[in-house]
Length: 294
Image (cartoon, rainbow, N blue to C red; front, side, top):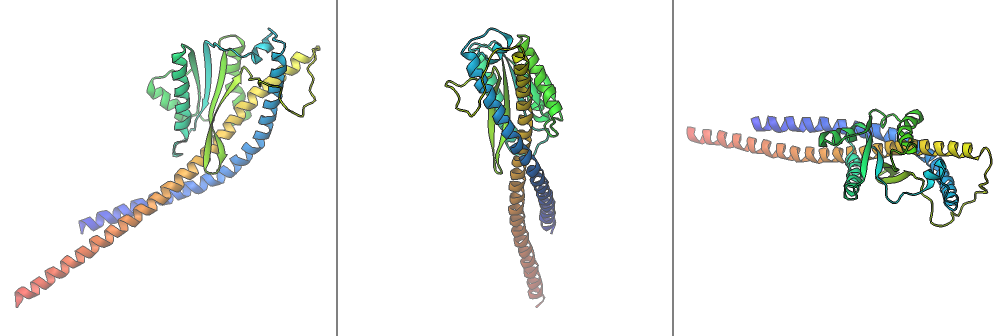
């Protein structure tokens, strides 16, 4: 009977876990709908501003200016110092969502070490921070609580520090890494060079009527556009990562719920089998007792 009690206790424990994972799946589904809508709306603006900057980069590279603005658009084939800004989740229980980003960052570190390039890490999200701290890897800056509650102001703060160092010549490149939202059941790892702005090899085919002509207010407009480009790419990475996180957590909790259901079925079968064996043993003992009294 002790075995029956143990099995029954396990069934109860797994059923409680199943209730928890089902509730977490429902919460993630509700949050995903809001985050997905925000990501889709932000993607339109992010894609357009990237197209505009790509067109500007192409035209500026035709003249090879040596100004500060020119440095933002001039590709450095031999960088000495690189800043890597990477986004992970603040919370767990989302499958391999964080691992994909961490693997990408570790590969960047490995490649940079082979080329003798110094890499400075700027971590966004507690999971990434915890991993690299445990590995003994130095983090230049850490931002906790941003991944779960992104805002444009926080994005400005994060990217401003990296761009300021690039402007002052402390770094030669800024790379942004995050695991983005693809659809309800999958995520897509995204690695982008934020600065220098990558210019297309050929003239971009856009519907823009933009003509670049030097004038007194041109630098101010370009500076404002660059600032918006940096800030919004960071903000979009946070929004996109949050949507992907909810998607990954929803899938992980659904898998956990299904596994718990299968486990309950297996334990229930074992319980019924053990109960039947117990009943059979009792009947044999009763019959044996009756036979011995004859």
